[in-house]
Length: 392
Image 1 (cartoon, helix red, strand yellow):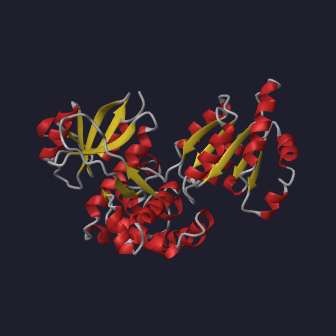
Image 2 (cartoon, helix red, strand yellow):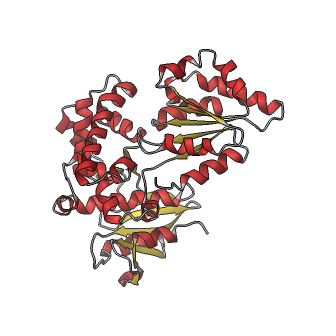
Image 3 (cartoon, rainbow, N blue to C red):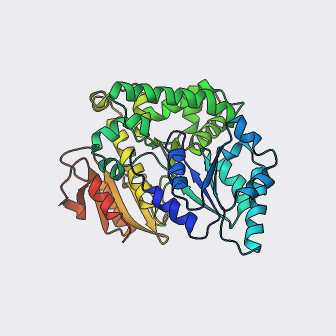
């Protein structure tokens, strides 16, 4: 089992006075395993409810009475979006305990649909809930167990894929995972959305990994309307499978690209969608550079945390930053990604950094040494970049 850094964060939030926490993340990312680890160490005991199970849903036929009786235990509710009326019950119980001056009794809510779950919970649990996102396994977690960066990039960060006995079993798991999402989750969250069409779009996004979003072009290829493509991408984003990376806007007197870039968030799923069975297949495919860029971006965004907002920057005359972190409302750090053993920043990277007045300039590459480059940038491996993003 790979230790997850989100575990200590979730534990701290639940024991620091927050009565409820929502743990978001895609299916099979390890949310249930993490919740059970927290439950095993909860001093007052715990109860776990999986609302996909009819037996657990029957236990909540009178939810107010059942949940009131569980205090001071930690109550874990998995797939809570299936019973949205529970949010109002939780609000009543939390307020009841607050009024009585009670600090015991906590709720840990798990879900895979971010937008749906956050909307439901924010409407009823405002001021009573903390939100945490659990990503697939990232590099600093994998390295603790002896797994290499190349294995993580090739297989992706879903535990069952990463820890499979070989590449063949890893690929089989990812293919089953994709199929289950299309056959099970799409009909559940969007019953009128054709799963086959969504699967084609998902594959097209993998082919165009990190490209500018062009809904009109995608719509023409799929034979649907541009607004329909937008709804499909909304769903994939909501399920933590796709990321829209937004452009940074600044008044620099230049024409800026204002269309988001789109990434399939897990590199292993990129490779599975394209039928790339192992690292040799990946390295021989045109997507290799874009796949590595997406892998680096997801790793660094996960490490940076919510205080640092991720963007990209691009002008119409070629100035570009692959990943720009904003802190305190200002651009703070610029990163270019190069899958090369001899990285060198593009001229447009320097121009973009100069445009925005950014001094912290890094070129992340698949190596371990750090060394200075021209144009004021520094080459650095992904592990080294993670260490620089560690909170001080």
